Image (cartoon, one colour):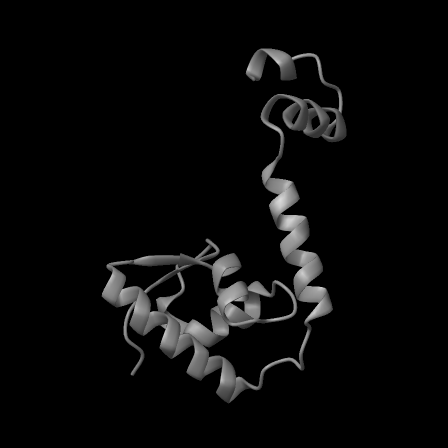
Length: 109
């Protein structure tokens, strides 16, 4: 795969070659997910609802043995309309890792 990508000059060329070789790309999955979310968009969750969703997610994550979560993943599981690192950082408080879009997973008080 890497050898086929050496001569590419754009992201679009790389995507086309990847599809040719692999039949799909991760971008295909992400585009389908974004389209589905756009079609099924609900009202932005309230602060209380976000906290409840976060607590529920953290509870399950602790049971699975997870210790870290990306802000991107939290955006998805909390069903936020857009990626908003400052809002997520404020929501998870001291569990946020400074200078990284990551948070520690722990039961919320």
